[in-house]
Amino acid sequence: MNATTRRQNSPTGVLQIIHVCTAVQCSPTRYIAFSIHECMQVLLHGKPVQEETTKDVLLELMADKYSRAILESTMDVSKSALELSKDCGIPISTAYRRVQQLYTHKLLGISGSINDDGKKYFLYKSKIKSIVTCFNNGTLDIEIVPNSTLQN
Image 1 (cartoon, rainbow, N blue to C red):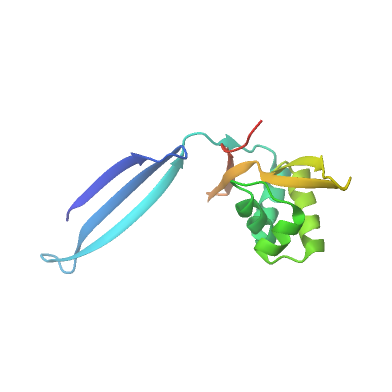
Image 2 (cartoon, rainbow, N blue to C red; image 1 turned 90 degrees about the horizontal axis):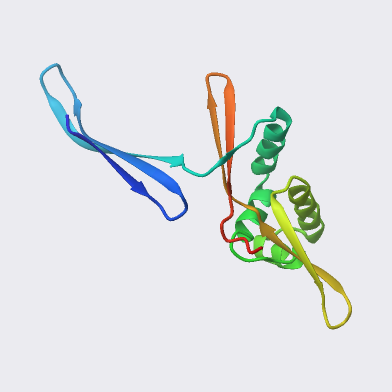
């Protein structure tokens, strides 16, 4: 059996460990060649979540497809609720509710301004790049990687 392991750093601060196996035993004396590629990512700069109630809320938010769509859509570019509604295919009232939930739990940032007509408008931007969860032997570990594209 032939196995190799390769490590590489990605630009997002993630260490990737890639393991490749190229043979399997089909009888006590023979091997059949094939290939298995296994990729594991290990966080280098994540912030662990300690409180159980926060972990529950994060899992609930990440289980919601609209919340995930909003976070993904605002990862690199700030958007208004109307833009989120159109871009993500979310009803506008649902977009406002999810934006408020994500903001309440500090996953979205808000910036605002007043346009030429005197109307207030708000733009939303994801404060996180990723959330990594691991359930192992009855313990739930969650780490949040902050969004490095945020402008202060």
